[in-house]
Length: 148
Image (tube, rainbow, N blue to C red):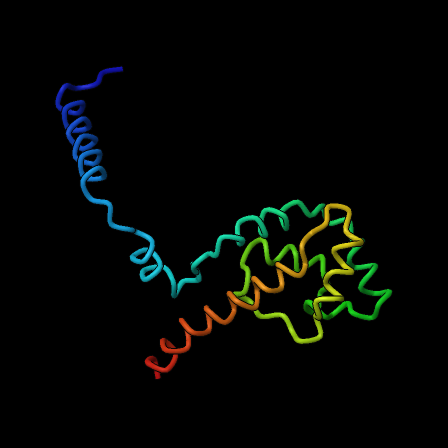
């Protein structure tokens, strides 16, 4: 394997510029990233979002929440495919495909969490989906109006 001296010098120069620039300039990058990628669905995260999504990722898709929802006549409270599918969808695109209806009350969601073996936080997930859906609609609505 042959590495030229010129390639090493260019790589070193680029690395040095990056290190110096990052030490001198401490401007926050998050607002710029959100402005660029916000319309694509990358939305701001609150401090609890990561923990909520990690907890949703622990779901083993055992179906106990679906069984409990059928027993309590609340299967479609989190969407037409049931709570298990809701958790699976939230872990991929929270709030971009739709929101949670008013029939998903906190008590019903807590009941689903109690019957889940890994205690998926349905209340926090529903709040996350509602907030992200509202944020997404606020970003997309002006774009739709401008297109027409």
